[in-house]
Each structure stands twice: as structure tokens, then as C-alpha cells.
Length: 377
Image 1: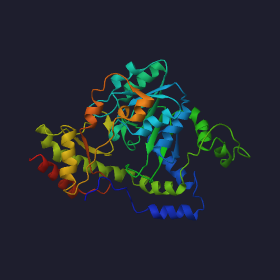
Image 2 (image 1 turned 180 degrees about the horizontal axis):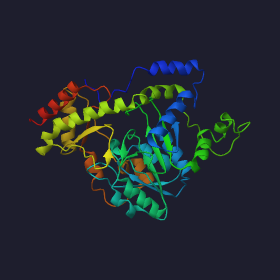
Image 3 (image 1 turned 45 degrees about the horizontal axis):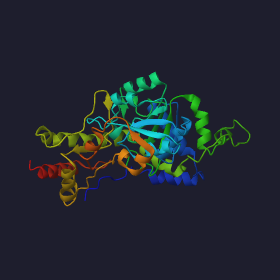
């Protein structure tokens, strides 16, 4: 069976984890955590990067820094993972869902402004498959209405929009280092902070509401309880695993992009005949090979393709998000702005193909041959 995902592994992970243990510093903000944070700051140009236990935690931390309160509204796509909404509904906000663009599966930037009300506090663009949302337009709208922009860049590490790193364009950006992502620490994430004025508050909230970060830097002689907070620090052992991947981030990204391009080339004939649709990469967007998907005719065809054909032939292809606005919690905590023209329809057409660091050229040839066989090409 060709799995949908195999967690990335470079060979240095166990060595670095052993070093973390030998350093007797396995809790949060140890040497490897600092290396990873500084690497992300250099790579993205963000003012501050704070590693977190997950992208969910990074988004929760962003919601706290944005001072989201009960009664506020936050605009986001419905086609996203539950964590995008969870972080804000936990604060008592309403998730206001906006339709997506069918070409990129990203939020339709032209539908955002009509969703804004006096209660709107933030826009949360989700960079699906590591392909950027139309950030110029989104930032323009946010500036016009005095709104914060919190980028869900869970899939966006090593991708960019017009030369700017995803996650470092809005006020806050959130990365995921889950085992399904291009670079992994098993479970993990990072919060990127654009404006330095938020850094001290972020450190306090992340350290259980204390100024412990200042204490370890020698800026105070003892640390105190300063504000509300929680524990948003990953173990340094997790960061040690991530560091092995960051050292080879360019190589890992290049390998994924090579397989992405191979898929795209081999499946072009099927798209040319109108049998499937392939991903779109808009001008100015540099993606990271996070995901390769095809769009089939409809839900019935996708079920036959994945379950009745690809799986018996040893290929694990999968669907993706169920639109949040149709879920029980989405109905309870959110509302859809405007008409759902594309969100549900397009979500039922997506079939994601195997994509991971060490996927081979031969495996992609086999997968695409089977897809052609399914369509009798």
C-alpha cells in the first residue's frame, strides 16, 4: 500500500533528541526551541516566533493577543480544519463563514467585505495546500475596517505570496508541525508575531501568565503572575526533532515540489479531456508542495475512485474537510455569510493523492497510471 502520508524523517532526529536529554533541558524553551524559533524568524522576517505545542495552540494564543471577546465576530472560510474556528469560539466569538474560490479553495477575498459588521474583529485567511490567499486585497480590507489579520498558515511553511513568507504578512501567523505537515515535530506549531508591541504579552500568556521569560533572560530577579495565561510551550525534545528537519528544509521542500510537478505533468492529459481538474497556482504565489489533489466530477465519483478502485489497487487517496458551517458546532457557533456556491460542492470533489518527503518517482508513476486506468485513458 502506498500510504497517503509518511511523517518526514531526516536521520538526525534521534541524535538531537538525545542531546536534549543529555542537556537535562527537556521542558519548554530549551536550546533546540531557541534554534527553531530563530530559524523561523530569519526565514520569514517576522518580529518574533514562539513555538507552541500545536497550530491549534498558536491560534488560541493569537486569539488571546487579539483580545477576542464574547459577542465578537471573526471572518474565515468554512472549508478549513476545526481549529481555525475553535480558537475564537472558545473566546465567545461567532465564526462568520465566507465562501471559497473554486480555483484555490481559499477564502474568496471579494466576499469578505460584505460579511463585515460592527462586531467584526478579525479576518482569518487559510492558505490551503500551501497556496496563498489574495493577501493584498485582504490586508487592504483589514486596514480599511481596522481589523486584525490572523493567518492560518498551518500548511504554509516555506511558501510565499509576492515574495513574502506566508504567516508573516498579517498581524499574526500560525504554523503547524504536525506529522502530516512538510516539516514536523510530531505535534507542534508556531505563532509568528509581526508587531513587536505584542511580544511581551505573548510571552506572558504563553508562560502561564508569568514574566518567567524575562526571569530567564536576567531582566527580573524573580518571576511573577502578571496576567491570565496557560502553558503554550512544547518540550525541547519535540523541538530537537523539528531542528533536524529545519536544517534540511530546502531539500525537503524541493523533493515535495518535484513530486508535485510530476503529478501535474502526468495528469495533464486527463484534465485536457475534461475528466478531472488539477490544482491552480495563481501568479505571485510560490507554494511548497504540501498537497496534491485532483477534483473529480462529484461525491459519487470520488467514492468510487478512492474506495472502490484506488484502495484495492494499493493507493491510499483521501478526501478532506467537511465544511464547518454544516457541522453541529458550526451551526451552534457560526453563521454563513452570503451563499454557499462553492464550499460544499468543491469539498465533495477533492481527492488528495499521496504526498510526502520520500515519495518516489516510481510510486507517482504507479499512482497516475492507476488514475488513468480508472478513467480508461
